[in-house]
Length: 445
Ligand SMILES: [Ca+2]
Image 1 (tube, rainbow, N blue to C red):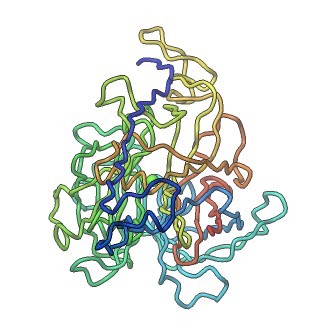
Image 2 (image 1 turned 180 degrees about the horizontal axis):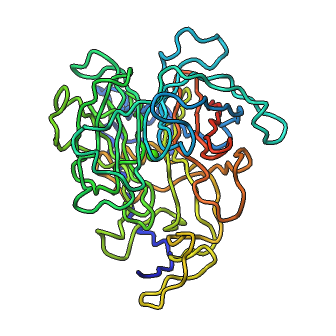
């Protein structure tokens, strides 16, 4: 094992934006006198550059905290205890629910040992006095926990710290019904666990199909979060690929910052055959400590102890942002034990009675990272490298979370999901209601 001082090395590659040569007549600067009219016989006005629709950036101040709600009791084959790894929003879910401003339903992944999927209602979030959960509403189970991945491809080989991502999309291509897309990985994926990672199932949690591999992606960079790409952006930049999938794996194995690829599994079969390699377009991929050479291009202020657990492509009227949620390491970063013990390269090794060996930072902050969709568009078009985009803003969220107990707490967050029509971002906070997760909500406008 080695200890790395984390130094963010920025490769600043200038991007030259061409100034289109004017094909119209040239006027002397600052002179609009009639005496400088174009020569007789030229009645064409100067050509205007095409107007690009102005897409602004959502700022952290555009998010307003709405409160939280609790999750229901155990159901089917699992529970919401030790949960939070994946969630997605279903616009037409809970059609008989009350008209309370929070329509639709949420699919989430339950206990980490089972990784089963359940669908729940969305009660109105509440901001209580203090951080007591008793004042909060509780969701109800619409569909009990079910194992949707067992028997799909070789996904049963995954059993150590399994990671899951999940996204809902309406019917695409030749599909006749909406689908749930899922991806699976695990903390250490040796040859035996380097299995095709992606699948889909019906919204009633039947009809699982898969599994498929993400083309050109490390197994560590594609299988922990998934979310939908807004259709107009996808049409312009990633035609046929409406699904974003990625992962951040600590230690920089996935790339030193969050990873993101655009995919469209329905374009390669209905369903694609088991083992299909899905065509994937990188949108964000920093240099990996596992596969790239130094000097590394990393996310600004990167720590090997960071954890990015979820993402959503936020939109509100004419503004947008690609947001990742997670836990950012602050101060110093080292490989070893939380008390600052650096793991030596050779014996004698220190005692580790609690199994804490791993990447640590002096402190951890729950936050959202904001990326500019036009940067990801430039990556998709090849005018920017996948390791170049940087967050333009961050939103600290620990003040809203319920379960921050000490400075070195990891995993402040779980997965997130976005109700695009009503502009509501949902976030799972693990272990915030006893051993269950809580769901937090922000208005995006
Ligand atoms: Ca996940």
